[in-house]
Structures are given as structure tokens and as C-alpha cells.
Image (cartoon, rainbow, N blue to C red; front, side, top):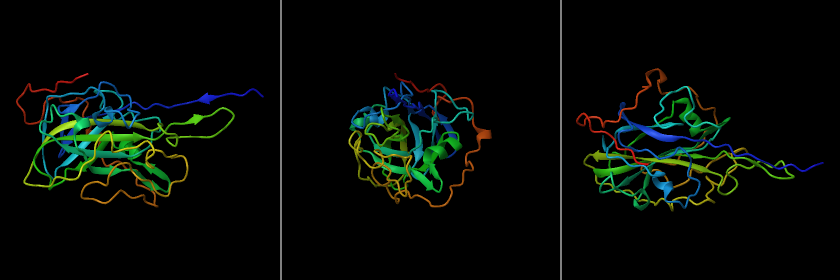
Length: 283
């Protein structure tokens, strides 16, 4: 019988693009929109911080303790809920980090010190249900709280999906590999520029990107097509909270985001700024 080798790699392509602050749509006014919707594949690349070649002159105002929502879609400028935010069954965690910087418009993400503020991974193993599936059910929206006690000033917000779905069928075998092969995971980070107001003084401990992840981390080097009793989300524990847990009961799949109210336009003016102040996208 002739030997046949078949290699398949399903590529998701998506980008975190829009921002909501306490339910107000800031659109893409303060995002460093990446030049490409393709993933970062190396944890040692400087692009793991804020992705490729994004820049913006917009800085959005938030208060410490505010609820902030990041929004992901497959194509730049897209807002439709008709398509999954990140398709191809690229299951995995969603994480959000922040970094205090002197000037959010010019700060270099790979030089900043980052602290995690939110994470969601394998939310249930009965059956398996991932944060990416929750994201898709909510039109690409993920909501978190800015820590109430952090010091005021300019910050970068780093939103990220880690896609763990990648399979390879090797010559003479029927072995199925996912991100259980080093280098198989795909990273989709993007950074937003904000100014935080408040009276806090906290300066949480930080990590670096690159540096926070290793290709051999158990939450990166993992086969998600096996039964997982637990899942360790890469990176540090979120500041001020406990690590995310895996529920042994089915996760409610009802969307919490009202897709009927999803806008089709993408604002480019920072909320509250003079008319005509727009984002300058780099790339």
C-alpha cells in the first residue's frame, strides 16, 4: 500500500479591533490595529506584545474600576455578528493584560511591564467549552474590569486569543496533534491606548512580552483533543483575582451580548474628544 502523508493546518485569522467603555462604543479610535489579521506564532517574537506594525494617535479615557469590552472580528473594520469572531474551531483562552506607560501613543509594547487583569480558558469540561466559544457566541466581545486600585496614568491594554487548534497527520501514522507540538499555538494580540483616572496607588508586579510565555508552557504545549480535567492558562495569575477554574457542569451557551444592538459602523473618534480627532492607523 502506498504511503501517503497529509499535513493540514487550519489557520484562523482575526484581530481585536474595537473597544467599549462602560457600554459606550469607542470603535477603533484608540486601537493599534495590526497590519495583518494573521497570528503571531513565536513566543520569542517582539510581535507577541502588540502584534505587527499597529499605531494610533487616539487615547481613550477610562476610570479605574470601569467595565471595558474588547471586540474581535476576522477582518479589519468588520462588525457583523453573522460570522464567528475567530473561526476554524481555534479553541483556546482569552486573556487581557495592562501596562503602565509614560505615553500610550509611543510606548513600545515589548519594552513595557505587563500585569494580567482578566483570563478565561476551558470554562467547562462537561462537555469541553472554551473561552473562544464564549467569545464567538457574543459577537467577539469580551468584558473585564480595570482594577479599581491601580495608579492613574497612561496604559496599554493587551487583549489576546491563544488558538490551540492545529492538527497534523504524520506519514505512516494516524496520530492527531494539536498545539501539543511545540510551535503549534497561534497568538492573536492587539493593544489599546488608554488613560486611567482614579486615586489608586497600586503598581502590580509585571512580566515582559516576549518573556511571559515559553513554547513548553502546559497551557501552550497541549493537545486539546484529549480529555482535560484541568487547563493552566499561560502567564501569571490575574491581578487581584484567583486563577480561572474549569467547571464540571455544562456551560450556559446563551449569549450575554445583545447582538441586535451591534453597530455596523466603526467609530474612529475618541469618545468625548473634539470632532475630527481620529485614529491614525499604522501599517
